[in-house]
Each structure stands twice: as C-alpha cells, then as structure tokens.
Image (tube, rainbow, N blue to C red; front, side):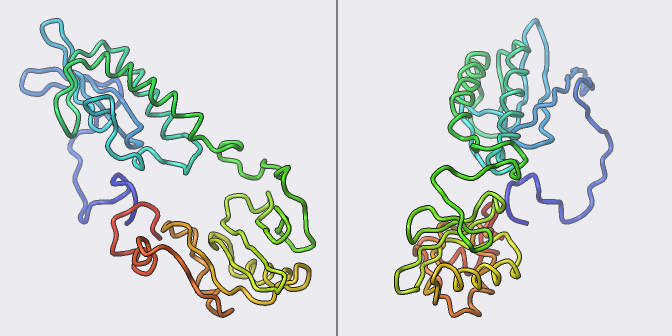
Length: 265
C-alpha cells in the first residue's frame, strides 16, 4: 500500500476489545477520559480529554504539533485538492479549542503547554491557507467544470486549443492528465499521460493525426512522480514514444514500489 499511513491495513487481524466513540467516556486506572472525534490528520482521528483538579489536558494525536504546526500534509489530503480533509481538520481544531484545554500531548514532539493559544493560531493558519489550496471548480463534481475561457474547441475529440501548437483536454475530461505541444513539422512533445482508458488514447492520437497535423509524438515529459501522470506510458511505447523526466524522480517512476510515498501507483 502506498500513501497516507492510515490507509495501510495491519499484516494480521487485530481483535478490538473496546470501541471508543465520539462523546463517550471511559475509565482507566481511576481516571476518566472523554472521547472527542477529531478527524483531519486521518478520517478516524480521536482525541482523549482528561479533566483533573479544574484543568483539562488532551492527547490529540496528529491534529497539531508544538508551534501550531503539522508534520505530514498528505495525511490531510483526502480528496486531492477539494478540501474535505482540510475542512475536517479545521473543524477538529475548533472543537478542541472550545474544550478549554490547557496542555496537549501530540503524537510526536514536545508537550504543548499553551494549547489554547496554539489552537487559535493553528486555526488561523489553516483558514488562511484554504483559499490558496482549494481547486477552482465544484467540490467532488468535475463534470460541472465548463470550458476555460482561454481555450477553443478543435475537431479532435476531447482536445481544446490553448495557443497555436499547444493543446490540452477539454472540460469533459476534467481530472485527466494530458497536454501536448505539436510543432509545424508534426512532431510533438507530450506532457503527462494518465488516468483515462487506452482506447481513448488511441482515438485521440488518431484524431490529432487527422485534424491537428500530428505525425509522431517524440517524447512524453513526466511532470512529477504521481502514477496518475504516467499510467498510459506502456500504451505510448507502442507508438515509439520516449519518456523524459528529472533525474530526481526517474527511479521513482521506474520503481514506484520501492518508495513509501503517496500516490506512486
């Protein structure tokens, strides 16, 4: 399994003796701990709140770390840019802030002694970050994205023109990765190719040869090492396409199973 740690199942079944639920309370060695569901760092995140001598402390897992920081962004990346995980995290931080917690214990790093102030600072950071992060089309519904005003249609299926020589997928292929630069000679450089059926690729290549002057795709440039940007490379090899990328990610593309990175394959 590749990606965020919470998606990796254990090697062997684990028996669960007691299930904790949001709002529940359980006792451990004379101490009562309240359960607060705090998703964000993972969908099933849970914080445990201890109240004693008029003060509240909490074990908050990976929700926040000392300095109002997070450690792994991709654990909060649930839907690839639509903000579901980020919104859950913001709501969890607000929930913890409302509990008047003085001291917090994160899963890593130092004890957070001024938890209330850090929750407030962390919430502001996340809220300020959200507009810059969120994708610019309807959440979880790529089909509602309309044509980009800078493009115009072509006779090739699914392909729109950005500028003379430069083409990309139109809105009906939203979420798929494909852009191509076609020279006057008919030779072309492709940028990324993945996340759609091989039969669609064959039709696109045929249409571009008929309508856009394509003769040969010389190479495909891999922009980064997420597998959805090069899943169609075996099919492109049948057309004599070479593959180019940076030396820093070449091995990650050739041997994705060697790396514990998100979305490699």
